[in-house]
Amino acid sequence: MSEAVFVMKLISRVASAAFLTFAGPQVLLADQHIMLDQEAPEVRNIDLGEPGHSHGDLMLFNAVFTAEDGSSGVITGRVTTVDRQDNAEEQLFKRQSEIVLDFENGDTLVVLGRSTYRINGAALDPHGKHVRAIIGGTGRFVGARGQLTTTGKENGEYIHDVHLLD
Image (cartoon, rainbow, N blue to C red; front, side, top):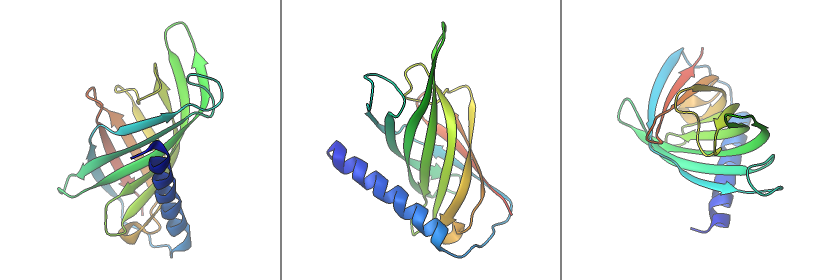
């Protein structure tokens, strides 16, 4: 799949989920946690502006996840670099994320937030937790709100704790 086709499919999926999230009726869910184990993602970096990691660069990703009940789905996202900080020990990148968790059959969660990426900017720090807002969903998650806590693993995979509120 060409990079342009990959980018267009990802943007279309994120836009569709966002539209459905805000267009549907609001139904609140009970307080619950769903644990997801994510495979290492396929990542596409798009260098915009200054050469190298800089403000405005994009990273697109997708990966398969498995929920604790054995069901699976796909996580897709667009991550934009919004700040770069260099110090003597490491480079830090503040990146804003738009993420869709697709549980199949029209059940999605939409996530927004900002996290710090270290060194080469390609992955989250495997020793930290990153919290982002769940701003909505579709299907069984219509009207969802809560937070997604992501923890990186040394092997490039991730654990996600989906915390949905009343």
